[in-house]
Image (cartoon, rainbow, N blue to C red; front, side, top):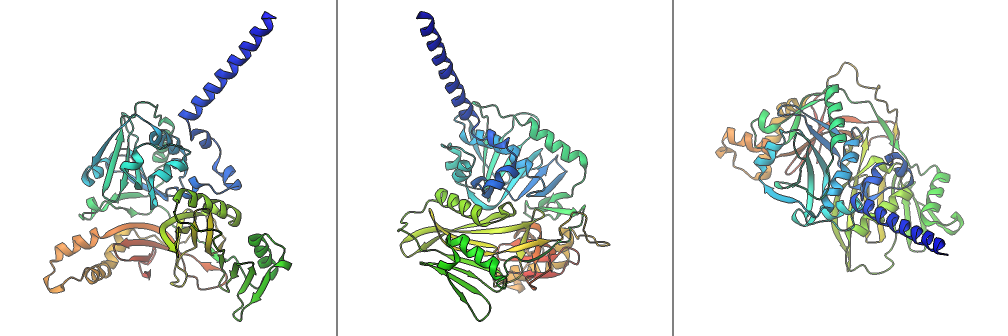
Length: 478
């Protein structure tokens, strides 16, 4: 009898120890377990909030003079490997912070480090929640929105810098966790040793402007040739009807179908509306089931993630480009705008009538409006590239088109040409450049086989310019 009681006591003790150790594991590694799962595996199952809030480009600073830039999907393991570290930092209860100046931040860019740039100013609290942190720490209050995250990976202790425009918050001396960046260091070292990358330099050093934007001197490779075509064709009636059944979750016999004069098709069920336009744009409307008097970004983002999981074939090719607060009658919500990537590079649309690839109006757990310009990639290969051509550097692009930039700067700033100092106006014009990216442009000119054009996207305070990467010609602006 005593022996049986002892066995029971021992069994209960082992169960308690097991529960305690499991709890400690999840407390210390809230995100790490997910990093062990291959991204492709869980993307196939669903589009996660964490996927929505990924960086779209990475700046690698090897030393004082050597820098390079990679775009999403090319070196995404950098972010995947950093997420467990970032999760620990945003959940830590013992750390120090300092506010640093823009000049101080620029000096840190010359140290061995990685900078993750987001396409939009993301809510830091939501970013932390996307990393499986239930109770984010005060970093999310000290820096409510984040545009980029810097991680020092040189000798000594690692530290982070969270940035939003010219505001920078350094986070260091994280005592209660072990911030291990050994794997990340080895990964970056492997990239450095290949020497198969384009060198980037800050405009402040190369052009003498008050601008920390990094631009390439000479591209190491040409862009792959890519063609796209519209994915939805209203003339393929069986395919379109299958889409209608999917959205309404009803047999087609219960759905009203209207064919318009231009070939567009409208489907109606109850108060819900689905329209497939002749140009391949899909629009969906569903009325709100109840008033939404208080907006919640976290709930709204998860609602959108689930919706896109059910209706998009390749959500990993999208990126969240913009978040806007909206109001419909007394209801409060958000408009989410998504961009599209091909070969890891963003794609812009050269059609003012089609503003974005995806627009979604979401009110917490309800999707009210959804609009998508769906494109299908054709003939994609890293080996199918332009022959006998060289991509112009952004130095070339700026030199060739400087007069355009200066003219527009003077116009938007309403300056008096007669009172302008040439040296000052050049510094101010160059300093007005907010961002430079290499991208593809979709001309949106044909139903089939639209050849994408490689462009340098140059963004200023007032305008976005697209210059052909091979000729330097201005091909689009908005």
